[in-house]
Image (tube, rainbow, N blue to C red):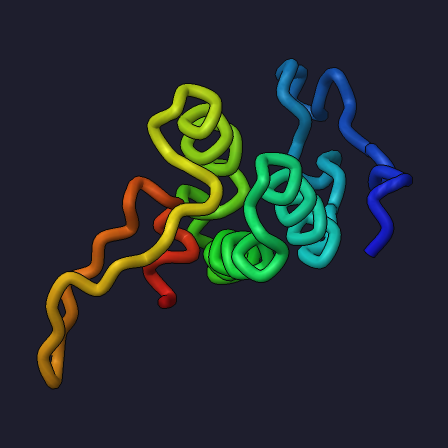
Length: 120
């Protein structure tokens, strides 16, 4: 998916009800592949490795595909980007297995992104 051309915008300044918010029919439709590619590029720009950036963007886009908007693209900037900017999260930390049993493991992500730590 090329990121050079943004999707066409259809949003209006006023909907049929006279509200300043656009009606749902007036909002642009952005393909999931485009959003995933955008998120991956953002993670790469922060220094996340390509494999982990793929995992991170896949986890977020799957939430959006399932209709769980609170855990998809909407978390990219306020949770992941802002926290990496503030040194709260790190783009590429090792994953340490502290202890392990047949059914569970205690994992230390060393303040890395849970998006790639969880699937590990």
